[in-house]
Image 1 (cartoon, one colour):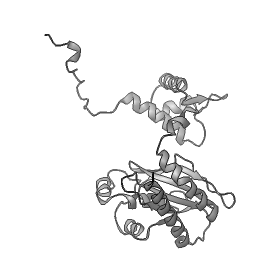
Image 2 (cartoon, rainbow, N blue to C red):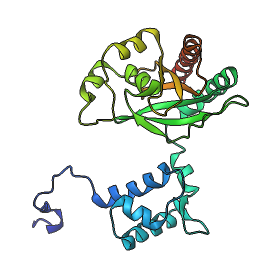
Image 3 (cartoon, rainbow, N blue to C red):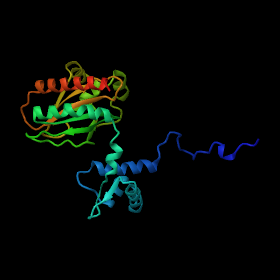
Length: 254
């Protein structure tokens, strides 16, 4: 029996590693990220620059996203997220977000601050869910917002939630924006159960965050942001720690 030529291993282009990522897919994802991270909708020309491709290539990529309902153009021709993104993101840590929502709602109402859930995402911490207070000084924290590990109270809290092996493996690597993932500040957050910061991520904004003890799950933290110059960090930290403990218990029942 002769072997089928289609079953034979295909030659790999010279210089291409077997684990090399797809450049086409990487550019497409970069386009999605560029739309999500901008404060104002970008034009096709701006997306082409962000992705580093010719405008005609960016247009074809955009048309593909439009067909799949992930991006759309408004009347001015600017690019915005489409409803398909909501569906796509709906399953991301769904049980964690659902369990965290009651705690975030209570914390936000009690403290009059924007409360949010962050999770570990590579070398960053990523905001998954946000609850804004019914009154008080509002600081907006959009879902999808990210900043480096070890920076700001949420970044320190997430670093504290990582195992020693994970923190040692990540270290600082080549990421100049990341803060140290070991040291007294991280250990203090692990010991007392919360971290605090001011002017680290956004000038004039303070934050307190508490890691969620949930072994076997993605490291996460509950956090608040505020602009008030004088805040009882200890009281806020204890409130968040209690909420994080309740969230941990709820996750254990799922």
